[in-house]
Length: 269
Ligand SMILES: NC(=O)c1ccc[n+]([C@@H]2O[C@H](COP(=O)([O-])OP(=O)(O)OC[C@H]3O[C@@H](n4cnc5c(N)ncnc54)[C@H](OP(=O)(O)O)[C@@H]3O)[C@@H](O)[C@H]2O)c1
Image 1 (spheres, rainbow, N blue to C red):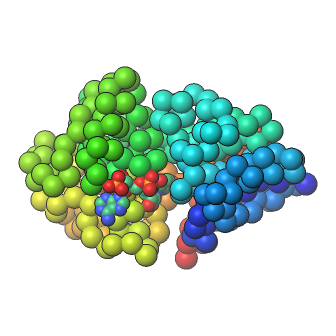
Image 2 (cartoon, rainbow, N blue to C red):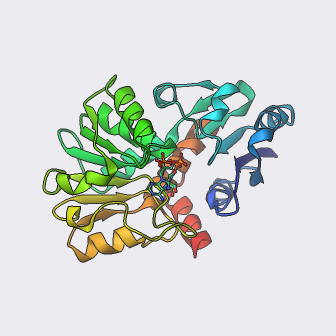
């Protein structure tokens, strides 16, 4: 049996095991995917322990996505982003499928980002992945973040691949009518976190709103954006596509995306 897993701290919330195990069952692959709570001080042991145990793949989530670069070699866009969410364990190679997942979610919703002005709220792992991916696809990216220094650093890094600048988090009102897409890459609205909007309500006019938060499915931002007639994109789509891409990297097989989506949705319910 081939072993896979996800490491994070905390990890209780993850629906990745449901998604991947459903895909393995569907394709008749003899494999199992488990979740492991790994404290930051145990990350190194977890990675090399998994390698010694013959694990095939690991997903990596909060708070290890950047720290894991000490133990794995980043491949492709993971190098630029500086964060990894998918590891090919035996090669100790790290990929970033969050970027792919987010872009695929936009593409599936028929949103072409080229030439569009996109506001990315948040400069953590998810915000970094999305800002890079948007800029690479020709969007003009505005990054905002509660901690200004982190946002400024992201904007500076993204300028290596495209257009990007920082806008202060407490002055978002100024962007009213000037943006085409808003991406929430903060935990605001997530179960267990503050249930407030990540942007002023006045920005929710004539924009596409993409909330990366997927639990609950209908976040306060999604609800408010719908109420104000905006097109919305759900975090679950990004989750499914990032998982599907990890599945493809590990197995070389076409992922059963609909099976993975159904499994994620029922795990969330
Ligand atoms: N759908 C998916 O597949 C998927 C994948 C990855 C992540 N996500 C979502 O993205 C969110 C962020 O994940 P991450 O990995 O980027 O986390 P992270 O690295 O911890 O970054 C969190 C970001 O949110 C900001 N933030 C946190 N609390 C805030 C608050 N109360 N008010 C304003 N800003 C706040 C942080 O700002 P500071 O710099 O000021 O701390 C930082 O920019 C997660 O909650 C998750 O729901 C979704």
